[in-house]
Image 1 (spheres, rainbow, N blue to C red):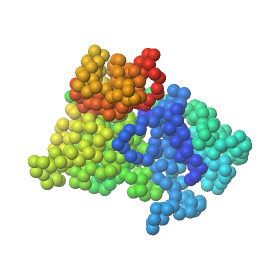
Image 2 (image 1 turned 60 degrees about the horizontal axis):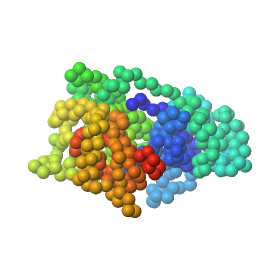
Image 3 (image 1 turned 30 degrees about the horizontal axis):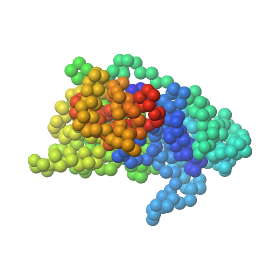
Image 4 (image 1 turned 90 degrees about the horizontal axis):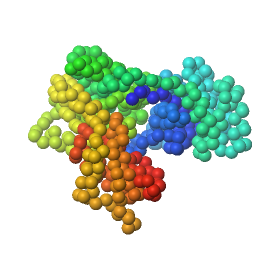
Length: 463
């Protein structure tokens, strides 16, 4: 998949960035995938407007501008003296990583000194800037947007993130400035493997082991790799790209102004470019909430994935250790039941030779296509073993099913009423498909649609 262009919302605190972000990410204009079993802050969303798909970033989500009181969790006063350092860092992050910057100001307060400072920074950046005057919830307030022409940033778009007014015009301007990122067919066919994980779990050591040489700096200090690094290898005649990324850590553990503040965005951009993801877990520390957090990002992008438990050589083991650890992984990553788990040591090379062949197999699984006759046989047998559910006296009837897409595989079920397709039965059907064809390490999408002449009901996709 081509790397998507990035539009970032920047501005001082409390100007309405997050409300505008949620309007774009959560409305009909956006493509947002919510999956059960993952809990994380929504700082990034994949959005679409006028046929252009892009990544929207809420810079306020990278790290709060407010200074947190060490004695509690209540923010201190947020005048310019309190948050100027954080504000500057956020804008620098956006300038460095985004293709288009959406500068959000507040119609209620008018121009402030902080707005002027941000405007000065943005004018010096060689990036397109779109000025959005937020909280324009009524015509009178929107008329006051003319004040912001004094910032010298060009056209001012008065918007209301709460009600949606003016957002379409704003997105028209954003899309007009977004670059196209074409990907040639040869590059698109190339297997790209991204290596993700928390800092210091051994990502760079694994790259070096796979390469057979020390091409990436490896030191025992968390956070060394700050950029996504691509390295091509030739494996049995096939060119494979390894993408080493910076470790993704919790926002609260990122120092103000540290270069790794923008490493998360780079890691997620690398994730979008990958076909298969290697999620590294530290065997010594065990699986953590942050591992599940990262897995949630992978899940949102519908990427194929292998869980690698690294540093297995450092664990005292008996005949049950591997089974117990696997059970812990399965429990923490309930939303990824199809994922293979491998126990490796990047230091000693234990089982590392299995990784590339398994990634190749999983890549092939993403492009597997089942014949329509086979899909309908699977569905017919599934309904015979377990009858579809009944709701309000009506039973779900599956008229017809077929696989309509690959990368990842997508199946469409034409039914009498999609409201009757309970999530638990959808999961049952997915399991029946996987029993017939495993799609190892690969998510599959189930889409339930009303048959011709049946009740129309709009419903999101299911996994």
